[in-house]
Length: 162
Image (cartoon, rainbow, N blue to C red; front, side):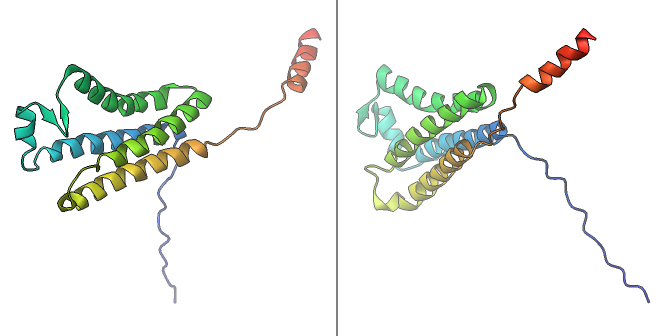
């Protein structure tokens, strides 16, 4: 009597480069960031305030809109920079920018009523989790051991002389 046992076909799980993980995390952060602002427009009175020229407690001005654009442009640029910067600069940039984005994300709940606590807790919670993933990925960036070039090049030089 034979017993058939099926061995599961394991899916190939190749390692993902740190740069790709960081770019994906910043992309997810950007989608969430934009949609939170978009869905916040559905809150009662927000559109009326916008028509009256007020956001939060600030008058809408070129300076305010420039600051808002900069706050969105920074994580948007991090998607590209995470793929383009050399490893050392990439790691440092991600650590600094993600660290600065955490208090900025938490500030979004300032002045909100408890009626909206679940909306802001979920959105800020996910944003902070994504930023924590970015910090962890950048902090634990794998290092390659330094390779001594002297013995390898010496042998090549001797081969060329012969």
